[in-house]
Image (cartoon, rainbow, N blue to C red; front, side, top):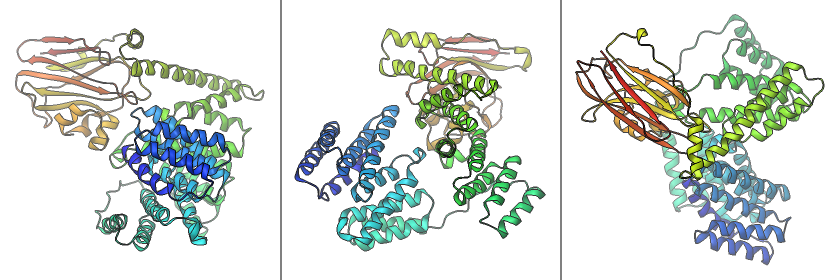
Length: 550
């Protein structure tokens, strides 16, 4: 978010010099810019809100308000607030472009946002198109776009292309930066970016896949002969879905939709393919792209929105969008839309009882999720209040029991409770250190943390201790609120039995987006006699029991 703020602050100065509207609008923009330069973005937002009240049909006023709202989103540490502000920013930017589709400032600012905000928000493709539109306006009428804006547009476009893995296009855009602004810092940075693109890259390791069935091979041959036949591509997509090859199904179905945008069946099948990809859970791909699953989520809801636009009275597709919207992470922002869809399904007289029952179930889940967001806000914003303690007490589950007969001793049993629920399951690790604090072994680490490793892990104590050693063998499915038991077989990360002595059991958890975290530890002696240690402290891990069995 901080890099977004820096980019927006710099470009706001460029843009202010390019306004050619009435003096009153110029005065509003100048006043807002002065507040922004002094670090008071909230005041800048207020000034542009006043400008819109005075000139409700002015495209540039809406655009600047969108820009400053985007800056606010980049400054806040509250992820939910950042999401809300980005939504408001786009409302203003979209309004600006709708008021004047040929306004290069509005197009540029919306393009700037699209390239700079996290890619999983699904705005990159639109941002690239906006910047391409700015360049087209410049090529047709150079006097309508200032030199600073066009240079920045090419630079942003290059970065957008790079994010989209279109390296050749990125190189061409940076070459235009060098041509238009020789000797400047932005041109020097463009040269460095081109040089980096030219570096030899190591070939990516690809997973070996089973050969395609005969039916798919036959369909592929037909598609090769008629690559633009949507009917054949649709059949190929179906065949890949049946074979559970979701990645190839996605490719075929996207090509179908590209050729035939009104094909409702292709949209439905694409949602199924994306769902299949998401169901795989976290794997090594997260290490290369920590936003991998978030991108799938946004792509799925975008596809569903297009399907509903094609057939708004289709009960199946409205139910699908409703149920998937409830299951989406909070940052996708589709919960209210999902509730509307599910209520609509309930009102349809021709919906079957089973359909209505499913809609009702997911409505309950939606309102439960909505209710939980209030408790999360209590804990996040009023952490020292009595009400915050009530939240933790209400969330704590009952204990369950450990069956020793299923294990061969000696072992160490690690028994703990997670006492909080956030919008997403937490990152969590359980590991062992010796009495000197030297890492011995990770007993368990949750899926995202284990595969993302150094790319995006919020378990600083575990990361520092383990250095991500031996994570693949102990990475498991994410866990959430409740009672959990793990067993250490008294072996270190090399598989060797440890010596008798004192060991420290550590459990670390971090929740998101509330950013609540806790580390709890217990020291226990492993040796000739059984021993038990109980630690009760904090709210996130309110109970830890460690027991050594000989």
